[in-house]
Image (tube, rainbow, N blue to C red; front, side, top):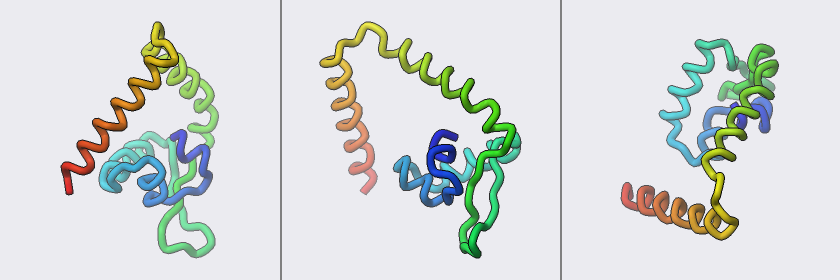
Length: 104
């Protein structure tokens, strides 16, 4: 939802690219969000690909959801120094690289 909010009228392939996630995984998530009434898909400017937009319902609850995510993130990182956070980020990048390069 954050990516759709930040990049209004974004396509499914653009979301996959921004998040570096397989399009199939994005498709499943978008289908769930659409079923819940959080997003809608429509063609804008005669594009081949449909654009993803947040519904009014999603926009109204977005601030609350964003605050909950931020609170959870802060809780997860409590007690980690700046150096710890940098180390963690580096380790996660290495793990991600191992996974993505291992698939090739």
